Amino acid sequence: MAATGAKTGGYKKVLLKLSGEALMGKDSYGINTETLARIATEVKDVVQSGVQLSIVIGGGNIFRGVKGATEGMDRASADYMGMLATCINSMALQDAFERQGVDTRVMSAIKMEQISEPYIRRRAVRHLEKGRVVIFAAGTGNPYFTTDTAASLRAMEINAEVILKGTKVDGVYDSDPRKNNGARRYRTVSYRETLDKNLQVMDATAIAMCMDNRMPIIVFDMTRPGNIGRAVNNPQDVGTIVGMGETVFA
Image (cartoon, rainbow, N blue to C red; front, side, top):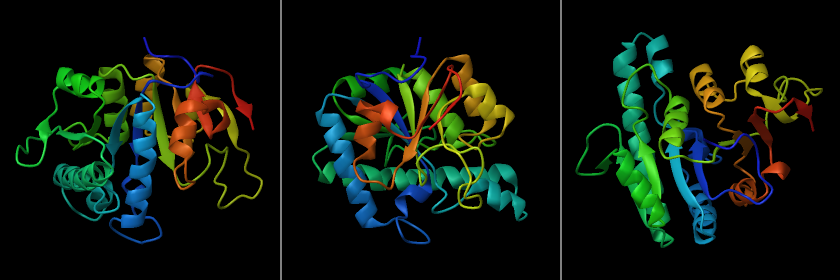
């Protein structure tokens, strides 16, 4: 069973969930190479410390399926296009990691043998045991499911201890801090409150899966250099912990 909250000694097997927008940096679209290189450097440091690291990345910097559907596209077709965007991002991450000397495997939920391995749970676990970073591409391989849900599913399947959710803010707030100067940041917040107040940590399906399996989520600021390592090693000091515990404001 997964852990119920953050640990003082750090984690040894984590799944990092990144939005596609995390790769844009200061750009308005696409992939910023400087941002990509910074993430690769941080991932290298984490892996060299002995942590098994896997990643699920979105595709919103290239194409967002829900947005396409709201503009008249068939939802299933739009979602498949979004899955392809996650594959582009996954290949970019793999290239950046391997430039840093980090062995990396892309495993796709949609068969694309020329560019990735098919997702097979036991093979993914074995890659992680050998010290390789595993990037899970194409979401769950099914339309109508987000990459948040894919992150929750893969985290359960590989027996990760925690999901690290990298964002552009330093945690979860009770209201939008960009619109409300009085917004308060949670240090810890329960799954139930996250769902009841629609705090936009992850989609409802992903949160419910984590709650059912007691999988903690740490929401932290990806734009601050070094925060991936801090989230792994000192989770109490970075961002917000979503879990079974009581709600506490920072």
